[in-house]
Image (spheres, rainbow, N blue to C red):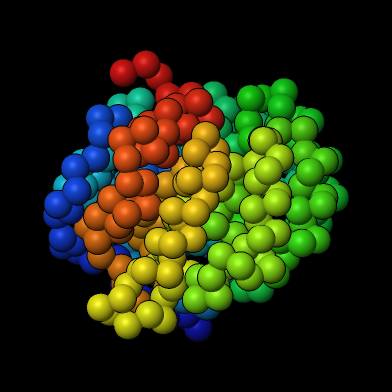
Length: 295
């Protein structure tokens, strides 16, 4: 652990068991793994150090929630060392795939290695607390991603949707937008940032994760959690049924509170309120984008 960093618990050791039953082959399309640090050291310079959240805890969570497939997203906690994520994929019995963190000048040899190890895309952050890359260099990388069957995933501050959207339209591969563009759910579906996200999604090369209802509505009173986030997620599911994905975001880094993963699963009953929508969100869309092996 870094000397100046504070270690925090970011997830519940015993989340509730959801009452909402998920369909077979349901996919959690956005999680992370942290550590264990003796084997997979954290990146240097972290302001907050999350407690270890290893693959064994993730597998146990998914068994409790009724989730059979998963996409593990490399976190800034481990930086460009994708080893912990790769290890989770390797031991996931073909049901776990990954998204890597790389530098824009990553070599073709490394992209090929990652693709062979089960990584289906690469992620770039445009957040105030994270060092970001130049958008033009990222767009320039996308033809090489295409050669390796990989897509682009982006995580950005909500206000950046306007300027980044213009550049991302030049991507040579599909683009996945994290956490509904990190919009403030309390501002509603009519806010300019959410409307810009919707216009971007009118382009069929864009996908969006309706994850993070606890992030975009984090300040809601407990009895209302996460109503505003659910409204935005349902609007996206209804308008873009073939290009929405869902994830728990376990183990919930950078939060003001620790969400209950069972409650996040139960929210799907309101986000995708019919069987067709639920099948696309949790099964068909992940299968198409991530290319899981046949069941």
